[in-house]
Length: 262
Image (cartoon, rainbow, N blue to C red; front, side, top):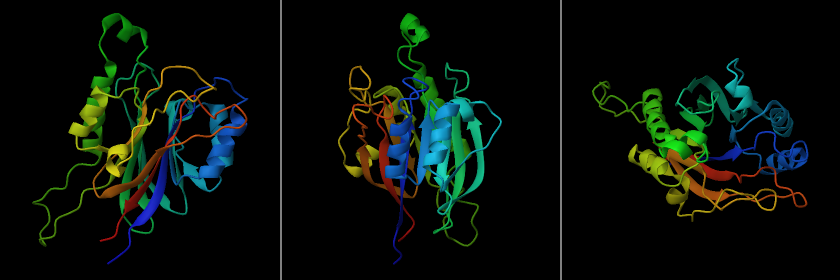
């Protein structure tokens, strides 16, 4: 019997350029402290990307000319643990023009298995169109997410294997700031995805705001989901401050996954 391999994934909305550069040291420090093996970022800006690059010198990230990879979202991975196979971006119809479903296919070195890692930032509840029309764009965004991930990592064809062994589905991770706790989450679950809180038996904990750095009504906005032969072992919402300053107005969701083993 082989032992499962574990790695840590984090999703973090790093709050555009608000209260920058005073947050820079806190952001650098929390990433140096946690050192996630996989990191998905939302609301990225060139200045925050420089800080993340410096905090994670053992990691690689996507290099791509599509503007969104530099000013909205990106994905980092520990180079000693993963190799990049391919990457891409899928348009979900978000109202912010550079946002996409950003994804990478990584090869996990210890097991040889590939893992599809993806991230998105769904449209904010306070956008003018939603306030005027009363219709949530996140419903369509969640449906397009499920459709895109099914296309990128389809279920194996049961009739394609001639030796009688059934091909295993590729593990998929999807995470980000989804700005929702109800309908978008319901759609993802109906699409076969399990959130890390439910999978690990952890309580839902608000991920926004990080007080006293930011204000607002406490909400669970940030999520990690998975599908396929991968397990969420632990899941928690991170808290970190330098003095009275948090790295962001959001708190990160940090999950330990197990892959491989029998």
